[in-house]
Length: 397
Image 1 (cartoon, rainbow, N blue to C red):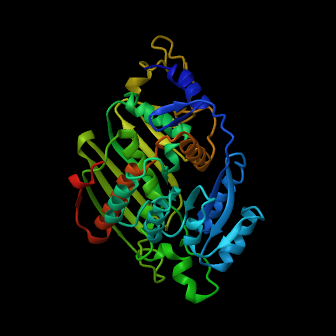
Image 2 (cartoon, helix red, strand yellow):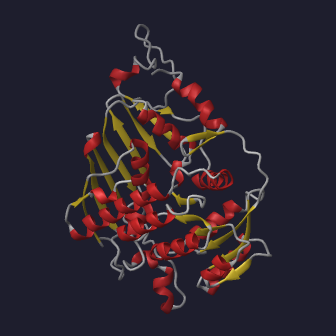
Image 3 (cartoon, rainbow, N blue to C red):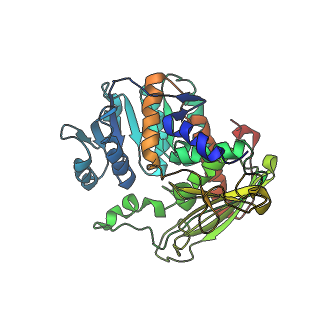
């Protein structure tokens, strides 16, 4: 492995999108898919804004939410012809709708996704796929019975050229033997939305309450947990954790400060995953540490840091003159890609469309979504109970 890795491999990721186990080139189909959004909170409206930028692929013909003010807010994100609906079952009964997007509170994912599959719809469900392990296993069994219907889970990093390249670096041995992963997703904010009507507190601030939410592990850290599963082709064998309501004593039930340690025995690797609502300094932090070098990732950019003994091997430092052959940042990092990537949602929706048109299994599918859901549920059980959680054979893909 040497410096041409950073030159020639970029061309592959820049010219095509990796889908499932295939590399697809330019796509020429002109079919527009009719879609509906179920759940019009912040994430639902965010996805709709991306859908609006893809008019040759998607047409939003309906949108659904239980709250009238959410439907009103969503009007600016959908065509004037799109229908506002409060009962999601009416969307599933509409034969003109090809696919549904589910962006509701986590507690509702399973029920709506199950009904959507049975109604014959293609499904894009936001992470985390289900609220608990039993739901994940049941949904996986159901979806497997409908192979012509695409079922995709919203883990955007699986579609990003940056994260695809990091996966390749890991699989090719470019980082050497990886033994440690450090992940954080921190903020200095109570994560609370304003509520004009107190009776709507739990519907609006559902992330604060255990009946509806998987907390910080599900809403934030599941992205990084899922990426490690995918990039290393593994899952954790044991999980320990801790946490508490340590910053905001405001009646919430889900913790505002958590830490989980995941042990991957087959890889000889430890993953440290933490989040706090009490300090924003690190923000999003994702480090993968190997014997030859480490990767430090943000959501759209990343740097490779070679170990000292590796620099000569990679052609970074000339052994005689000490001249630098690859441009490095002041802190010794080498950009993994020449420029920042788009928001991962753009790549994810593009893959959803192509997967439907070509009947191709998406990278983030029912099996991998089940795996991630189990990991998140195990993290939460470890964090809230204090008891070590062990992966069971029943969970295997």
